[in-house]
Every structure is written in C-alpha cells, then in structure tokens.
Image (tube, rainbow, N blue to C red; front, side, top):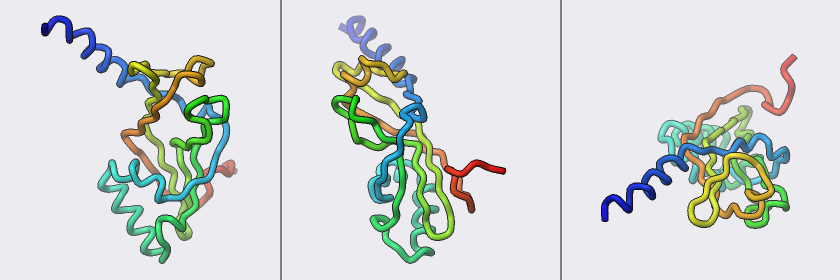
Length: 144
C-alpha cells in the first residue's frame, strides 16, 4: 500500500517547485489592497509594514488602489484574475510585491509556461513566498 502512494507524493513534491513567470502575462489590471491580503498575510513583516503604511496614510485597505498582472480572456478559467507582481501606492510610497505563483489544473497538473494548454486547462492560482520593496518612485517608470 505504501509503495503505491510514493509516486503521488513525488508528483506533489516535484509539481510544487514549478512556478509560472507571470511577468509574461503582459497586462496589468486594477484591484484593491484588501484583495491582496491573503498574500500579504503570509508574511508577518509585510503585514506589519502594510498596516503601518495604511495607518500613516490615514486610509483603509479597500481605499488603496493597486495593480496586478492580469490573466487575459484567453485563460478560460482564470481570465480577468489578478496575480503577482503587484504595485500599490500607499500614501507617498510605492509598494511592489512579488510572489512565487503556481498555476494548476485538473489532477494537480502544474503549468510553468504560458501555453495554449495552460490557458485552456488552468483552474487554480496559488501565491506563496512574498517578497517586497518600498520606493519613493513609481516602479512602472524607467530609471534615468
């Protein structure tokens, strides 16, 4: 019985290492900071920093506008959804949050590249390992 479970465990371990490069999605879409809280909550330090910045700016999380990479309509089940990297302006500071993004479909199949099969079959997006940086300048602007 144990021997039959080993291939499944190996599949789970190997598929968890596959991440999708969402920077290749090409489009940004708006969302509120409150919609990013599941990712922000994965880091106590990030949660604390965001909470402090929101308090200092005297706004609520749902009042802070952000942008995330947007899955275009060709993604049958994910079209319109937002994912990392995210950019938010909180008060006079810019916050850029990146994450490891896993995209999976039926049976736990992982997709590491944007392909027609991924666009047709992907159903779940999972974000882990947030990293972030604060800046005085909009990260969308080129640096001179």
